[in-house]
Image (cartoon, rainbow, N blue to C red; front, side):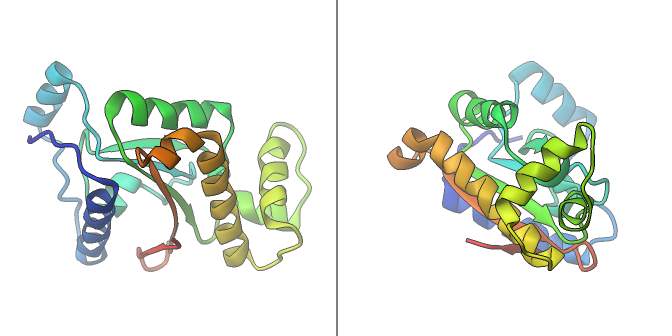
Length: 188
C-alpha cells in the first residue's frame, strides 16, 4: 500500500508491464483486498495514471493493466470521446491527485466507431458519433478509425490542458486495446 508519485515514463512502463502480465493471466492479480479498501478509504486515492476509455464492457482498464483499487483514475465514455466533463476529470486527476500520465485507450471492434463509420444514429448517440466522425473523416477501416479517434482525443486533451503539458506536468498518449488478444498497443 505504498503511495508514490510516479513520473509519466515510470507510469507508462508500469502499465506496459501490467498488460504483459494480463496477457498470460487467468485471474486479475490487482489488489482488491479489504485492507486496500480500508487504506484508500482512510487515506484517499493516489492513482499513478489516468485512463480514458470506452464504456464497452469488454474493456476493463484495471484488468487490462493488472491493477487494483486506487491505482488508476478511470474515465469511461462510449467511443472514448472528449468533452468538458472528461476534460474536467483529467484536470482533477492531474491537479488534485497528481497523475502525470493520461492514456486514451481505444479498442478494436468499437461499437461507437462502427456506428460512426456505417450508420447515422439519432438521439443522444449522435453527439458521440458526430465527434468520432470529426476524428475519422472518410476512413472506413474500423481499426484505423479507432486509432484516428484516439489521436483526436489525445490532441483535444493536449490542447485543452496545454499549460500542464508544456510545463511537463502532464504526458498524454494514445493506445489501442485489441479485444481478441488482450494486447495494448501504445500509439505514441
